[in-house]
Amino acid sequence: MGKILLVWRMFRDDLLVMLVALRHRGTPRAVKAAFVIGLIYFFSPIDLIPDTIPFFGMLDDAAVLPAAVFGLSRLLPSYVRRECEADAERLARRLPLILLGLSIFLIAWAVLLVWGIIAMLR
Image (tube, rainbow, N blue to C red; front, side, top):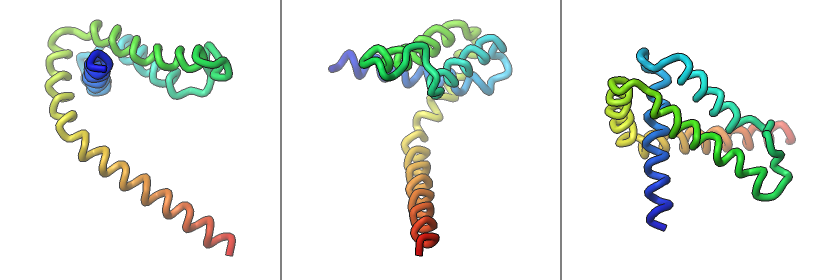
């Protein structure tokens, strides 16, 4: 279990670095484009292996984003990586507050949506 948590922490840290690197001027355009394509593939309903195939259908989704993050973060120039790691560390400290605010917003939005639907049905 400890190894899984270690891998998750490394992935989370590198993911934050890559998200910060998207906005950094020194990040090569090819790295930005490849990371955005990986994100689009991850969230896209179109897959190389359909999700109807048990296990393997979800395996390609679970492998693309971590592979893109680990591979592309190594392609960042060293000065860009250092600056983005510092920014990502500051972002990680505020992440629980950001997630709390996002959760409150989504819950309020869902409540308003349900209230609107109920009001329309009356």
